[in-house]
Length: 299
Ligand SMILES: *[C@@H]1O[C@H](CO)[C@@H](O)[C@H](O)[C@H]1NC(C)=O
Ligand SMILES: *[C@@H]1O[C@H](CO)[C@@H](O)[C@H](O)[C@H]1NC(C)=O
Ligand SMILES: *[C@@H]1O[C@H](CO)[C@@H](O)[C@H](O)[C@H]1NC(C)=O
Ligand SMILES: *[C@@H]1O[C@H](CO)[C@@H](O)[C@H](O)[C@H]1NC(C)=O
Ligand SMILES: *[C@@H]1O[C@H](CO)[C@@H](O)[C@H](O)[C@H]1NC(C)=O
Ligand SMILES: *[C@@H]1O[C@H](CO)[C@@H](O)[C@H](O)[C@H]1NC(C)=O
Picture 1 (tube, helix red, strand yellow):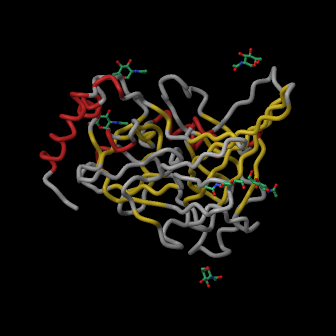
Picture 2 (cartoon, rainbow, N blue to C red):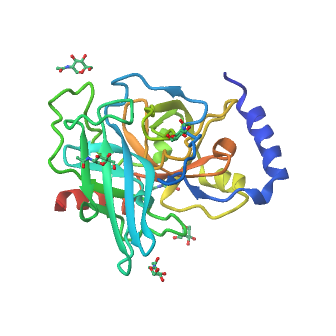
């Protein structure tokens, strides 16, 4: 449903004024301990289920962290989204790359599941499990400020992009000149958001194409003048009800109508669609040059 931009924004501003202190920047990654039996309820809010082949470069990323403790084993699964940028690399948020604590017996394994709108796809042609030594995050990633929130995972064996490009293809990275060049476009996001209880039910890819670039001053205004990471830009759905990215969409691509990836899902508020969301800016030099350099270097 369309509605006049200013009216919608005004109603949002009123909400903000009354709840000033309740919004914290939070990563939009979802973590669940296997032992807990909880239903994850969030996914792209007010979006649409994707159809098969609509986003053949978007994959689910599961991060499986196991810690051996005195009492037994703690297994924690985190959910993110990633995009295939070449046969050998997927791009995600830096906070989706987990570093293990050397003083603990911990291991991390990444499971990249592509080729389907359903997250339980186990087809070996479209699925790769990757050890932590093949996962990289930006050297200047800051977990407190979310500055440089970008990560890369090396895929081995490489994906066969010739296999079926309607199911599996790449969205190559070309550092976009400046996100402001796309300020009049509607931007699309697609992410795996939710996972259901008990792992057996499929999770479906959701999307929305109603986000628009918002300049930093307006965005920081909405965020009650909290400093937002310089390496990020904001996007917002000005319509009502507002669609947004949400938990589990961390690392998802945000793309232009010409299918250029301009950002990576990074942070939001709680509730997810209450405030503009933050995307790591691929036009940012530190971000994009690191991607180009790191992927050139190999694993
Ligand atoms: C690593 O684990 C040890 C032992 O539990 C803990 O004291 C330390 O704070 C942890 N370090 C980090 C960076 O989490
Ligand atoms: C890959 O990881 C997923 C999720 O952790 C797991 O279900 C699957 O069994 C793993 N596959 C292989 C071949 O190890
Ligand atoms: C690719 O996958 C789609 C959907 O499963 C299928 O309809 C199509 O025939 C496949 N194409 C090839 C070349 O295998
Ligand atoms: C998850 O599995 C447990 C054990 O099998 C079952 O008791 C529970 O009802 C399931 N939850 C859902 C939402 O299916
Ligand atoms: C972000 O950019 C502003 C303006 O250039 C600068 O004042 C600020 O220190 C930067 N913040 C960080 C964390 O680099
Ligand atoms: C994009 O352009 C705006 C306006 O000219 C400028 O303020 C901003 O620093 C530019 N961003 C990048 C990443 O070059």
